[in-house]
Length: 476
Image: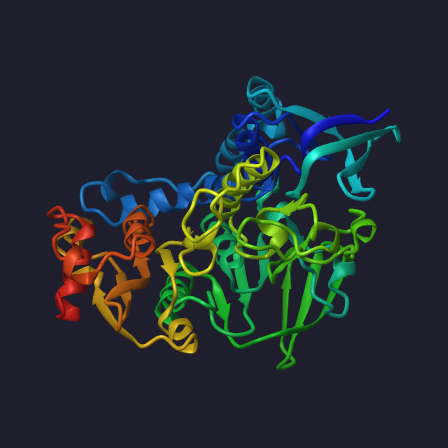
């Protein structure tokens, strides 16, 4: 006999938890299906452990750059203590706390691997092989996330490379580490492992942090080089071989790099293999295309909207906070449609993920940090928008003086010249992550530049950058 719920959510990571929670708050009975730890990738192998690995190095460097504090710093990073702190941060890889929260919220849990078996029907296979059949009255939401993509480089897969999972859960620090890829994961892990004592060599096909404003990647590459990393831009690995405990990578120029480990950070692939998508007219292994209500573009959704996809698996914005934002909208719209409430699914309503298109915030926790939201100048111009930009050296701010002479930073504001509203902002510098939400509000709220002039920044803080950007623009 099948167990019946209003909503079945496949994947109990941070995103799936929010879909279930928001639907349950609207009165729906919900169940989460999970084949690993409740809390998912972000809690145990991504956001939380990576920041735990990065923070000690950042704190140490900050102290070393301030007279009076630097004299008190007599030791160096203790890798064993950092790894122990990381393990504490991820609750010793025990999801008991997450499960307790879920139960307190009134959400059920079925452990095992899920597959769709036609519309609104899910079969869950437990570790012992037993099967549980679940049926949904309202909807099924796929929140299975993504996994690291291993590119088809000769010998790479056989060399048993690290992905972000192994890098964030490591129990030892390799003396030498090759990082393949220059995106956020590659840059953050190169920063962390350099601070932990590894001799890091980055191999990046183009520039660092491609897709962001160019100055951001240039600043991070310079900082990594000064910290002791070997950053090789516009380079590719053509072959990898492992012999014993040593990995050797051959580059496109014929040179070789040897290390104890190689970390692959070149992209992601959706966790939809074996999901039973063929039973609903889709293809296993594919990304799931959705509209702004997170409804999947599927044949079986034409007359009865029932299949949704939130988070990485829909490829709109592969960020935990953006997935949780989608989840909140999905939970609400699923409940509203089930109750025949005709929800308003226009832009910027509680039932849609409008911000996915051009207002996605992201912080890269390198040292210096990079914080960005909205469109870069290049992306805006390619979209056909007439823009103007304002840039400013953050080291010239009064708030930067408390960092002595060590502050390095730059900010850029991208403005829609016809509507006179900000559409993109990038900050690169020490401690800029906490400044990003102001920019996000300005962009989402479409605040006119003339009105922003009246948002007076406190003195002397780094937020004074807003005044300097507006002065540089000269239109307020």
